Image (cartoon, rainbow, N blue to C red; front, side, top):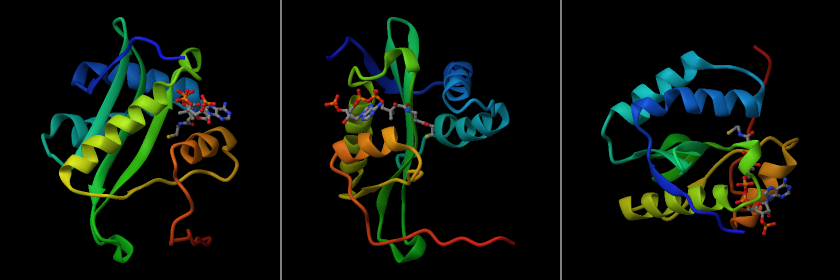
Length: 147
Ligand SMILES: CC(C)(COP(=O)(O)OP(=O)(O)OC[C@H]1O[C@@H](n2cnc3c(N)ncnc32)[C@H](O)[C@@H]1OP(=O)(O)O)[C@@H](O)C(=O)NCCC(=O)NCCS
């Protein structure tokens, strides 16, 4: 089902809505983290950073954040999507699909042809979403150790 919504670049006054959406989704409030992300991705006007919100009426019901990064881990420039959240009340109505299509389109217009993300192996719904968007395992694997 497709619902009326608009997708636009986030503005500073979206901060509280984003903090609240993230809190309800992850069950952890991170206001300091989001203030820092807004300073980097909303206040600045760089063409390689993207913070989009989805709005129905005047309520923000979802957001996606990403950027173009180059040469880390030897990777040529590509898009990274590192946050995507839709309100529990607005799910399974193609909101995330439209946010992801929009950020991918904007990244493509800046000149990259690959978009990457990371998903917890335990997060079946997000994994299902990204697979539905055509994403598949890439050529990198995460390594970690206790330090
Ligand atoms: C994953 C998420 C973004 C999907 O948002 P959404 O707006 O409901 O997704 P869409 O309606 O666009 O769904 C598109 C596809 O994703 C898959 N999908 C979505 N929700 C799903 C679920 N609960 N279970 C399985 N597959 C699902 C389906 O393949 C669906 O296609 P279909 O409608 O043809 O079945 C949303 O569930 C969410 O915000 N989850 C929490 C994510 C999170 O933890 N974010 C914080 C860290 S970044």
